[in-house]
Length: 143
View (tube, rainbow, N blue to C red):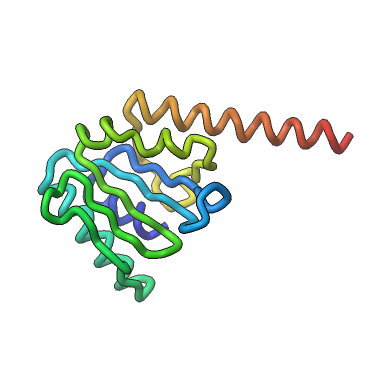
């Protein structure tokens, strides 16, 4: 996904792509990222906008949080991008609200060199374990 790649290019951390479409009918994906401070959050948001405009010809329907810059939201309809400062992300824990959502591997977005904080790594591991368990259950049913 272009938004995740753009966030990565500006050194965002804990980039997470959640497929929320089956759970939330207003959008298909959340891209969630963290910037170290309000200036980096703003720079990441600007880069996401620039890259989606340049590579996909898309502009957001709305941009929220530009005044406070501790949480910027870019609404592209089928994709909503959330960019937080560390404190704000830890406070809201948005990714936990949709913990049943499938997590898209960053490698699918063309991002190969990434690290997660301990909290986000646990979420990714739990989501991957759930996907594996569901696949095993489906195989067992077919046998």
